[in-house]
Length: 324
Image (cartoon, rainbow, N blue to C red; front, side, top):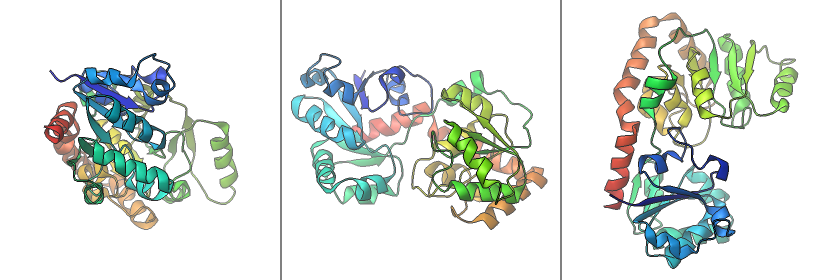
């Protein structure tokens, strides 16, 4: 059995999270260890970088702060290292400082492979390294969602707006609210601070937003249980990403309207893909889902037929194929 280790920026308090839709799921699926890279580099674990030689494969989930940590693991241990670009490609190629981008390119050429979360990223990364590059994504705990957390329920006539954890009204948020106002159904929004609620109170002076119900669900389990009650998901986000929200929606048997720059959205809900600023098409699709039960069920049925691709088992197979 492969001895696996994940190194990420996950807060130390969350390192033991299991069966959630987060990068931590890689450690769960691979039955491996998980370390916070910054804490390790600070000496909090009182272990040298040579320690990683104990593992057959170390996955380093890359953010700005973990680039140097990945280089240290590769240079100071004998472990095979997989660089996992856990985020939108634009973040890495356009927003990193130039010296850090050079260090990232150095890392992906030293590493034994590179995993990405979107097929669109593969040609870009292949132009920067001769090492194997593959789309692996993030494993999803579908069995836990279906059997433990989210049994079928009668959906409420409400739209859950997926704006990103802690980013409720950033990332094209005003377009989400404009679409919600045009559709007319109440909205459900996850918030992390009173400023989100105040923002909606102020914006209501100018946009006829329907009632919005705010929730605060730091635990993914609580969030997905609440998501299960809504009728429809809406997430107009401009980033070219994996897209956890569309997958959450499919898992709780709920359609999602979102752009096809989400890998999950274009795979699960191809008939519900919109441009991230196309309010007219968004409203038409939402109204069709509200009025046409057959269309609603067809979109769910198609998503069901694609869900196996996102399972723990399928993700693990993609990873092993990449590093074999």
